[in-house]
Length: 198
Image (cartoon, rainbow, N blue to C red; front, top):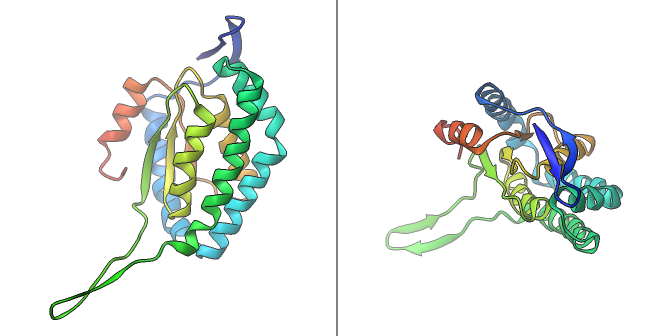
């Protein structure tokens, strides 16, 4: 599919469009990766997320330029949003060690709560602040030990694709963060049909 730059109305990139088969494969990859990702110690998951934040920081200007061109926003806004992504990932890097349950005294014993990952989560991101909103969804999902099928808006998928690549470069295991670009009526409808996708 063609991604158009709003400022020039010219093609900025050609992206492979996902359909039902690609959505199926992404869910299967996330499901297969879940047991190992869930088993990563909180400390090590936090370290991987800090490396992810550092990888984003090292590519901040390139990501900001891409976001500005793909969304059609001022470069100063895009730079601020990429800086926010680094902050969000660094914040959630500390979360795996803070996922604490509660104990509440009740008649006849104690009520206990546990915080556990859901498994495969489907994350859908709109077009207007794609890199920032992606981080707000991906950060807590990774911190909690979930694996992800991320569906960015078809109009603005480019930074989500780049975040997927940077996650791998940072050492987040293959299959943990899957980016599927396609029409919502196809990909999202397929994602929500799976009982395995939270």
